Length: 289
Image (cartoon, rainbow, N blue to C red; front, side, top):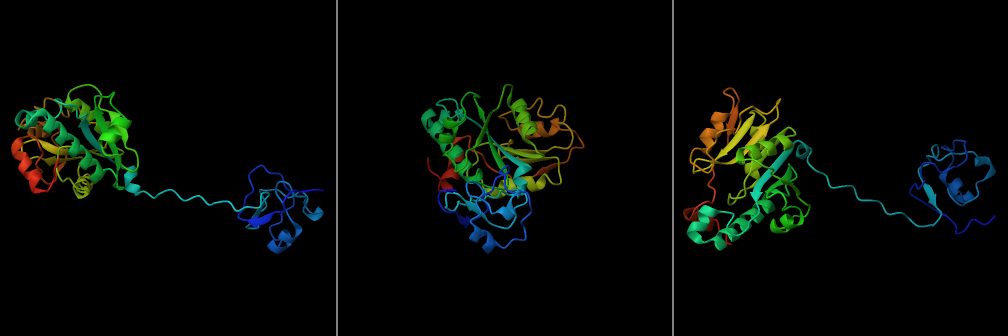
């Protein structure tokens, strides 16, 4: 009986469902099986091994009818277990001319302001999106501008970013929706206008959520550059309601909208980039656009 090319022993290659003799052959020496020319697919089996099954064939090696060794697959890259429970939401808008950094644009021009917005977004993604301690989600507006265009604008990280739309409503409703959707059970939301933001800042916020339900990062202009939420039950009713956004009272109004007994942690104060005077801080850090 012709069996084709001779078979050579390699790593186990049997597949579930391949029919071999029924008798269990665990105790058979490997050298004996090699000398007999046992083949799982084409070869003729010795009479004393008839009835064996692939499910009971556990001698520690197998045969390939092609005679070549199979390549072992590389294990997937390990991720920190905390990344399954922590989500960083990067809240941003498409840097279109005249639609971003409007206050800054009135002082330095719309073209320069748009270029600065692009550089800030790319720098923030490069600094934070590749950290394996959390999962990064890009929440964008308008909702229709997604996927490839955003990845290109954001600098194209090694692993693709998850991109979602912010949805409808004012800033408070969109922020609340993003935190509710991505808190598993922790979510931290930041903007893309904080120069020199580091992973340590985000890690500090997630650590603060271990002892508080909300965490805020105050800004020097009365607003805040970060807010996070840890899911303990449902979303607090009325949170982020009646907030005077883009004003010196944004932080105070946000804290007033939260339940009185809701524990809120505060982390370091940062300066965002909204006016011409803020560019001096950016230049001092050696950043250019």
